[in-house]
Length: 531
Ligand SMILES: Nc1nc2c(c(=O)[nH]1)N[C@H]1C(S)=C(S)[C@@H](COP(=O)(O)O)O[C@H]1N2
Ligand SMILES: [Mo]
Image (tube, rainbow, N blue to C red; front, top):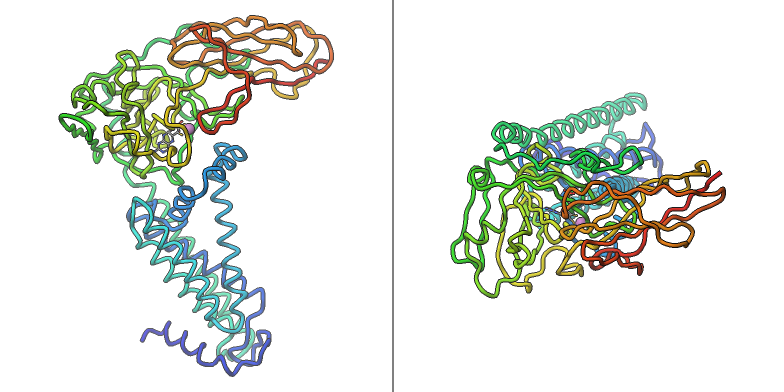
C-alpha cells in the first residue's frame, strides 16, 4: 500500500474521535480545518489537477487539456441563443470571457470542496472527483477524444486534496509551529509543481510542429501573383480601414477554444459522397494543381449593423469548381459538406460552387503567407459572396457531396441553410459621440455587396435627403468598397446614416433585423456633436 493511501486511511480512520465543530488546533492531532486553510487546500487541489491534465495533454493533443475539452463541449452544447448573446456582448473576446468564467467556476468549486471538508476528507474529495468526472465525460464527447489528461487531472486533484487535507489538520506534529511550517512547505511545493507542470504543458503544446510546418510551406509557396490593388482603393486618411486587412488584424470567429494544430505534412482531404470518382489529396497534390489568387472580403453572419466582423485578404488556392468537376458531381447533389479537424462543419450549395465565375477556393495562402493557424492552416475554404458560416471552413479535412438533409453545425442550431451576404454599409468616421468642429465634416466608411458589387453609397444627415458619397476606386465585385462624403454641418447634435446600392441597382434593406437566422439588416447610423 502506498504511503499516500496509508495517510488517507489514517486520517479518515481517526474521524470519529473529532469533537464536532472544533477549529484546527496544534496539540490535538486531527482536528477540523480552519476556513482559510480549507479554501487554500481546495484551490491548490483544483489548480494542480488542471496543471497535471494540461501537462499530459501537452504530450499529445493540446485540445484534450481538461478545461479546453470542457469548454469545447460547453460551446457545442449551449443553446444557440446563449452563444448569440456571448458574441453580442463580448464580440471576438467571447472565448476569453468563457475562459475567465470557467476559471471562476473552478476556483469556486475548489473552495467549496475545501469548505465542505473541514472535518472529513471525504466530501471535498467527492466534489473534486465529481468535477474530474465532468472532465472525463467532456473528453469522451469530443471529436479529438483522449481521456488520459482528464483521468490524470482527476487522480491528481483528489490526491493533492487528500494529502494537503491530512497535513492541514496537523497530524502528530510536535508543535504548532512545526505543523504550520510543514503545511506551508507542502503547499509551496504543490504550487511550484503545478506551475512547472502547467508551463511545461503549454510549451509542449506550442511545439506541436505547426510553426515549423508553416515555415516549410512558406519556403515552397507557388508564386501566384496577387491581383494589384489600385491606388485610391481606400480612404484610410479619412478613417476607413486599409483596403487589405493585415493578417494580424483580420477578424476571427470560430467555435475552437484552442486553435487546432494541423501540420501540412499530415494533411489529407477526401472529396467523396455523391461523386463519380473520389479524390484524395495531400498538401503537395493541392499546391501543384491549377491555382488562383483572389482578393475577397469575408463577412460573418453574426456581424451586427455597424459591426466589425468583416475583413479583406488576398487568398491563393485551388478552385473548388475544378475539384468538383474532376470528381464528377452526381445528379441530386445539393451541398458540399466540409468538416474541420475539430468537428465543425459547413454546408455550401453545390450549384453556387459550380458557377463558372464564382471563384470559390480551397485556400492555403493569405496575404502572401501560409494561412495563419487562427485562420485555418493548412487549408480552408473561401467562397466569395457567402457568409463564413456556410462556406469558410477552416482546418478543412473532409468534403462530402450530399443533400441538404444532413444539417451542418449552424443549421443544427437553427441558422439558415443558404447564406448569401447581404448588401450593407458602415460609417467609420466620425466615431459615435465624437465632438468635432462645425463646418465641413468628412464622413467615411465601407460598403459591401460581395459578388454583385457596389454601385453607389448615399448618406443623409438628420433625416434629410439622401446625398451621393464619393466611392473609392473599385477593386472587384467580391470586395468591400470605401466611400466618403464631406458635409457642411452647423453646431449641434447630428445623426448621419448611410445606405449602399448594389450593381443591380438594389438598395440595402432598411428594415431592422437581427443577425439570426441569416444576417442583420438595417441602416447604420452615428450620432455626434458639432461645436
Ligand atoms: N473550423 C471552423 N471553421 C470555421 C468556423 C468555425 O467555427 N470552425 N467558423 C466560420 C465562420 S462563422 C466564419 S464567419 C469564418 C471566419 O473566418 P476567420 O476567422 O478567418 O475570419 O470562419 C468559418 N469557418
Ligand atoms: Mo460567422
